Length: 171
Image (cartoon, rainbow, N blue to C red; front, side, top):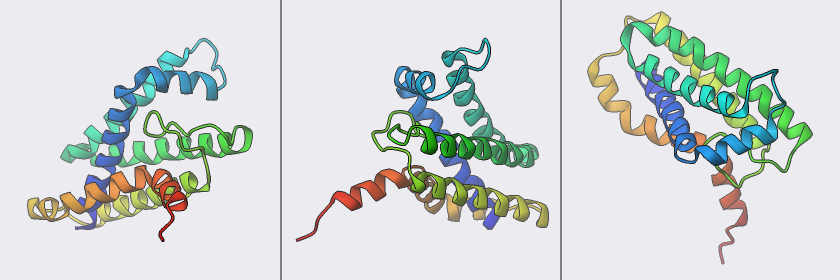
């Protein structure tokens, strides 16, 4: 059941993130241009497109039975790279948005790093479950689909939720 939950949660995170980036691609491209140092002849548009396609590729590979281990490895690498990017961004431009889900007004913070750490742990746990079992049954996917989707979207937008809760005063 852990494997099914982890796969579906990660599929949600990567698919939702890439969908948000595709929806506001111009804003995401501008964000990449402003926050990523020029990488040789690689343009911001090329890098933004590559990020979007890599996220879609991870989501797709996690959904296909013989490719889930490759998808988990790619998810670990992508999350590690994004975490290094966030650390650098927090150090050099703490006022900038992380761009994790396309356009966001929330400045990069420790919450983004916590989120990525949780996602890395989820990915590692899912990897462990994948190699330790013969694979989840269809019923495991059915039982965990809704909770995994909710957790995935919540993790992706954790910084926005924390920001909302900080600014909401209950009387």
